[in-house]
Image (cartoon, rainbow, N blue to C red; front, side, top):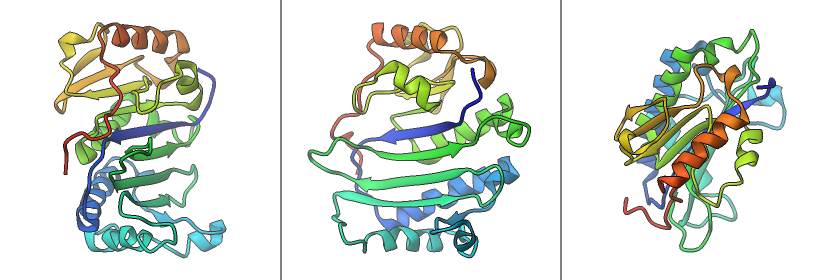
Length: 236
């Protein structure tokens, strides 16, 4: 795989939540990340410039994070059904970005509650994030904290190669499908994880290619396992 940035995306359906719930979930998630890698241990609000952002460190406790979510509810275009979001970055080199949308429960709009962790290009500075053992810890932390319908560690190129339908799972280096038993997945490297199936396209990020991802996707499609997130997933 050519050197390119990647991202972890986790997605789930309509779900009303309180800002307090969101703050507690995000605090737990950030604490888990901090235990995994120093690049994921400090976060800042996004600003108009790097200098201004570095003057806005984020306190990663539930109350402070709840206040960040609550502040988003006061934006001009806010309505309850579109939820509330926060965005942050790690203020370091290489850069990592994080955005979370929670509480969305629209009747017609085609988007999902989600978490997106934007990761840097794989190089010497970011190698720890992409090591198989650490990458698995990060991916599992996402799943455990947010209980998504599906999650992926992928790239924009791999996503575009698949042309997924709206809200349909995207296969990546790592893929998670909730409520799927590994026995139903005709993929060599698949194991149970957090009430679903965890699929690995290659042992290392650098070994992932479009052919492997397409093969996995075809197998999942044949088994009818690439189910789009419904308008409502029954969670409240």
